[in-house]
Length: 101
Image (cartoon, rainbow, N blue to C red; front, side, top):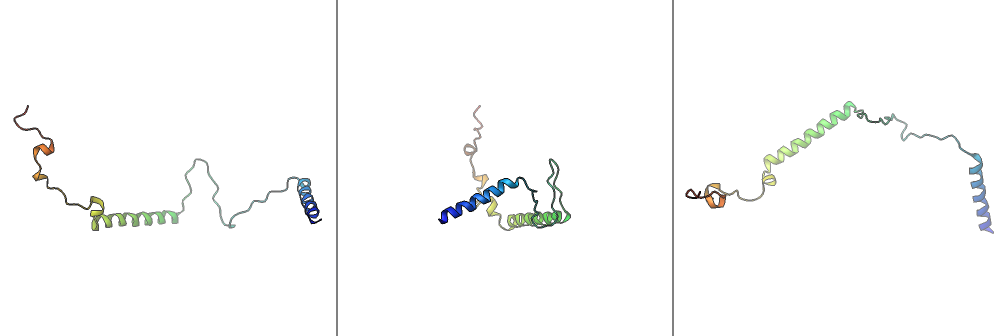
């Protein structure tokens, strides 16, 4: 009998939803604060705070890159001995002999 009761409740809820028709749609704001409306094919609106934060972040990034290039050059150039180019022969460099034409 309880399954008939549940079916009746579901039938009543569905019938009420169909008979009410379209109701006013409620638009909810996420936090109630200011929202920036989307703009089609326009640059985004950037606040002064966002500009300052981006300048600070990019300054820290370049400081990190240049600091590590100065103090850890092997990370960029590799961990091996540089070859002495004065010890290479002409044959190794692909230079033909002087008597060849």
